[in-house]
Length: 158
Image (cartoon, rainbow, N blue to C red):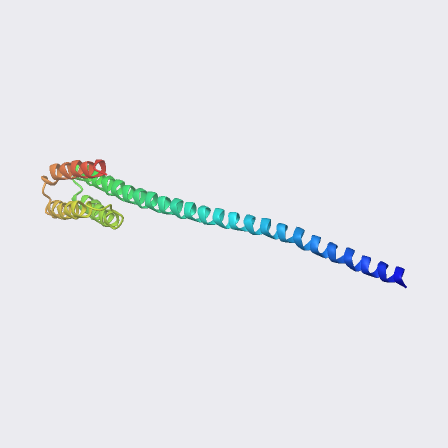
């Protein structure tokens, strides 16, 4: 009976030592996993911040390109108006001047700070030149050239 008791007590002690050893090994593994989880969470936060910064840069670049495209299209319309004036097509010239004003309004919506007033001034000048063209006045031609110079200066000031 003593030998059975010793055997049972030995088995219980071995099982207890095994459970304690397993607990300690599991505790170390749990800490390693928690450390890795924390590192990965930090990496996710850094990646999100980088993504947000890139998205903001992309949005700014999109606005700049949209603004430049609208200015170029307005300039194109002014050039067409000049061509039509040279051919004494005052009606078509007026239509191109109206298109230039519309495109300048689009450029104003995406304009950087400080350019909105200059764009408004250009749009008002185009309206006065359009009125000249509708009156079949040939003096609209030099006015369109001045507008093109002002528009180029506006595009270069960016």
